[in-house]
Picture 1 (cartoon, rainbow, N blue to C red):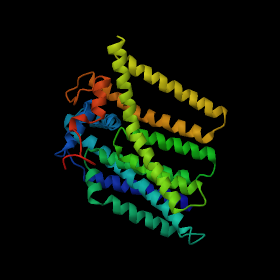
Picture 2 (tube, one colour):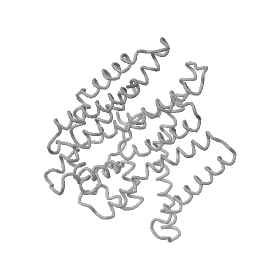
Picture 3 (cartoon, one colour):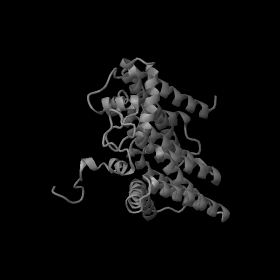
Picture 4 (spheres, rainbow, N blue to C red):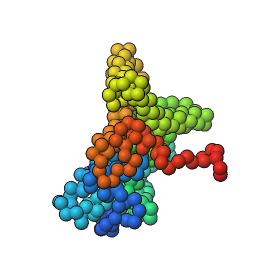
Length: 345
């Protein structure tokens, strides 16, 4: 058996062992905090507290079906989703550690010891798997287990991209990373913190002559990209809100006409930009435009909030049944302002 097959086998074994452990120690019902809200919201696709987690709720709904109609088993079934995603997170963490360790050892040896690499991955992954906070999140319904899994998956894809030498393959991996990040926003914003890591890996991959200044610039640019994605998505929603008010209040058009117009404009502009960069063989620009589009596609899971809120479910916090309500919900305006840089404290 080759080292690569053994490495894959160890990763999947870690997944099975850790998932089994989490399932054996799983909460049989709701924990005494947000878990009860997320279990109920997943079971009937309802609207939890802002800013919501539509992708998590959609997948949680599928897991609730494993209760086979027995309501008393719904909590256990949805809790099991955290156990499985936590096991997957440990698996991808193991593979990531092995790849990083191999990169480090190649600096000192032409043929690093496979036993040493796999042992380092095992120690790191198992240390994380048995840590208190991660084990707790793996046994109850909360967003953190799923979010950590997506973060581990994104970081693993970043390292896989770094190993590719063919430019077209690299671009495919970058688009996949963008799509996963867009999806992750429908669970938790934690995943966006992988962007600075991506920026540094990209810099050291693409530039042979590196320096402290170059690394600092790469980190700063990736930080700006993170802020752009974080606030750009919400700003786009605010633009749709302003168009909606203009179309409905000033021009007397039907509800939703402003948002629909903006959506058509974005799709049209995206298709034109893809076609334009393809004709001129601008590979990097084309990849960037595709990546931005796939982030938005992943983020579109938030349309579930509008659909479900309009059906007035029992849990319907903020009642975001229209675009203005959705903006209020996404901006978390019910919590008020926080004096991060200025204010009373």
